[in-house]
Image (tube, rainbow, N blue to C red; front, side):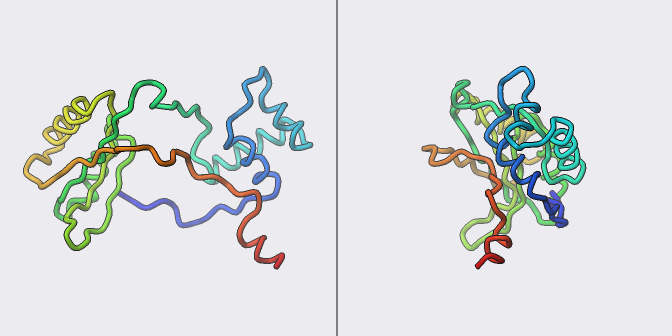
Length: 176
């Protein structure tokens, strides 16, 4: 598993204001980019050009619908954790990350009393479904011989993706 890109894409004022709008959801209207342009005081072409630029610079990964899996009945979440040798953890993580059943996968450092270094989230409509998926993944990925556990969510405390702030921290500090 590789870390994300280190080159942070600087964004301009129009791009920041655009992200503040689209991160809350693209308007469900016939011409959403025209409506966004009107809210920004610019043109639809400039909105589309800015979104394309953000995508090309990898400042954003994609524009997509985000289903509420709880509303769809997918209410059980199991973070499967494995203790695999460090020298193969990257390869194991890449293989796990390619699986449709896994929504996110991480390599993390071990800690005293915590031997696990590969983490992979699996969702399902029941605890049994999640456990069956993890058992299949473990067998197919050759992880059966490694110590592992599954941590189930017990309560949703917050569910939100990363948000862009109205103003960057650097800009706020510069004003002080």
